[in-house]
Length: 264
Image 1: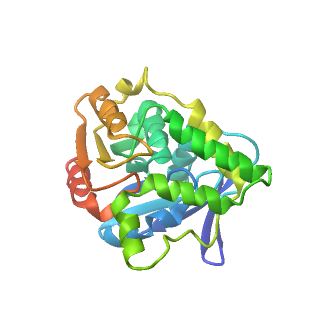
Image 2 (image 1 turned 45 degrees about the horizontal axis):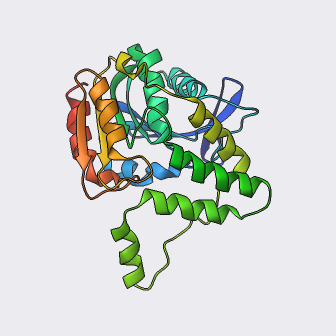
């Protein structure tokens, strides 16, 4: 279904907003907490020669849903979208919460995945991150703080010190999105994240896997990504020393492209 140039599909009792770009090997890009599919705009511009699928998880963007959901529900949505698009197997790249969705796919839908790239990943949501994200989102829900406070905290946890110093030296403020997501949807995402723990089963992922992590990540410390990579037999680990939690796609695209092409 196309409305004013925007794409929607009805699956699993929700209306999912998505985009379908280009032609070639199919790649699904899955966003993290609070991130709608515009997160991947820069990535899509780099991925000539691939069919790139981006979509809004429940809780953000244009996707309409009702009630609580789980990480497995988000993975089911991805598979249902592939079904509608006639894609039997795809490469999957998931960032942060999206990497948890990717883990669910790897554990439950291995036959649908050509390769799995987990960016800024973890087996269990770090307690410090859950504390600040959940606390500020709860304050926004109660009207005690604006959503801009949560956006500032996310920025502070996602980007390294050098990024903020550059803005400071240029006399600019670090930007906050003009359009902020609703606290109810983010609260639903946080509950799903908090309830999902793969520490005792991530080793069951048997698809070709690559883990990418920033060396300066304070939202999810590098040791978390390393633990995931160590648990998955045959996985590759790429540490990008200069990056924080939000890793610019250009910093790892060439390595991920080679990885995907080797598993086409």
